[in-house]
Image (cartoon, rainbow, N blue to C red):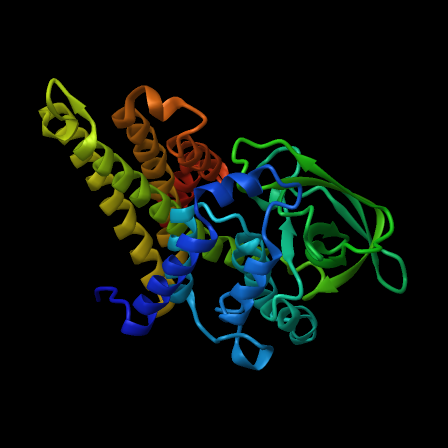
Length: 370
């Protein structure tokens, strides 16, 4: 079966692109990169009014009841414009994790405020090893009699500095478990911004020192929900990468049409033509891997292989295309004033987010038993 977007889904993408062209242009992205908060609350509320935050949250929990395909078209546009919003952390990570945890009480508590744009959320998983696997989780959750307390450190937490709710992956006596922490007023909680290569996607270091937490799901059974979240987040990230890479290709083509050397546009030179053609092939290859993963999750299939394939393919693709965009632009592409390097930074940061390409390739090989 071939994936085909409906007219409504295509219109959703066009609507988001039109909105972001006005509210998330390059000057606005640069302004928010330098801002301590890192996003515009007015834009966040507008996303909520358009049902974009609760896009894949079921209707009975206040969402729009969409799925992976709707998320793909939105995340492509966000990646295209490098939009500064806590959208990936809240939608791709936190909301998907709560849904995957299959805890009706937790879903009713956390998801309606998220869908309404009243609560920004994130997931704290990575630690000092920077590995996205269960064996690297060392943060401890101790049963205090009337609840749990957390002890440990989490790194590279997306938008952790502005999150109202932090969902923490920690170890209990029975195994890996999930916990919710209300950041405001939480005891023993320290949040510090971290310096990262991608200034448009802020991250934080979070320390828990006997911090009270609420169990989400069943104790010791949290990792399957994390795995499901990582698969859905990989599709969302691959969509951002495709959107960003396609914008890099457009930038390179436009520049090749107007920049002249020796009295003619550089796009007329064979070497530049070949470079642009290779960029197009890369983008189309990544798009195919992304859409296959989205179709697999929607229609049923081996999601583990499809999502790892999409993440590995789109990560390497975006790195190459963003680098080639700089080469086409020549010296100006290396300057801080030009947008090309912003996409280059995003590409390299995304390459390790949710695990690197090599790890996803190894996971695919292991999964299919080669």
